[in-house]
Length: 263
Image 1 (cartoon, rainbow, N blue to C red):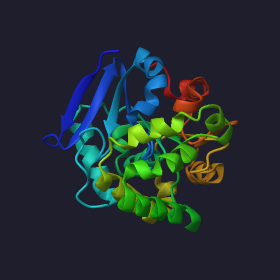
Image 2 (cartoon, rainbow, N blue to C red):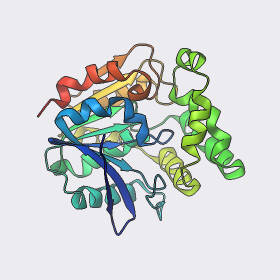
Image 3 (cartoon, rainbow, N blue to C red):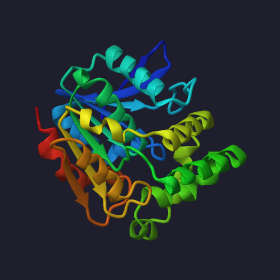
Image 4 (cartoon, rainbow, N blue to C red):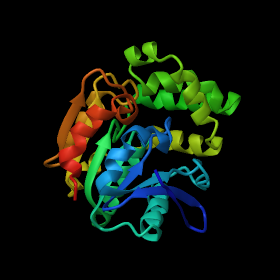
């Protein structure tokens, strides 16, 4: 596939683009960079122009100055503007990217025609917040490589990881490309975020897809989003973990095909 490299904010935000047609924008997870969408990218790019954002601290995007969700949304709004994404863009977000996509669509419904959230949360319970705090502490003390095994266990279902133990090293290599300050800022945001009071303001058609074995953002957290948004649809993928595009690409494409559409 051929990719165009994009930058906005005088190089502060980077992205890559491929395909042609109606715009799709993709926000990746905290524990998996944009390459997590590689298995589904050829299918998406067949009928769409796909722009994959690199979050602050990933693949050349500068780490955020402040660990604030509003700052992320403002940076990504600049990206939408400078990358000339159309007002009927379909926005897809996984994990942390799903939380940010939700905040973005609430703040800028004029920029998004449809929102597809994959394994994300509007707010985390105490044990979820504690997990992000623990990961941040490990990264502070030992760098991102120190959480490779934790990351793999949070991304993949137990059965998939048992069959593919090499994925732990794959997570290590992916995390080594992330700026620690960017990761720590995202962990801070996830500890503090609470979008649940804003869900009833959402006017963008929304699809929520979740792996039934997601240990990072379990189905209950995803159902909370779908239940809070009028008209939202929820689809659960049996036996799948936190990152369906990576673990079950065909099932993921089947789940979103009608919603995303060819046009």
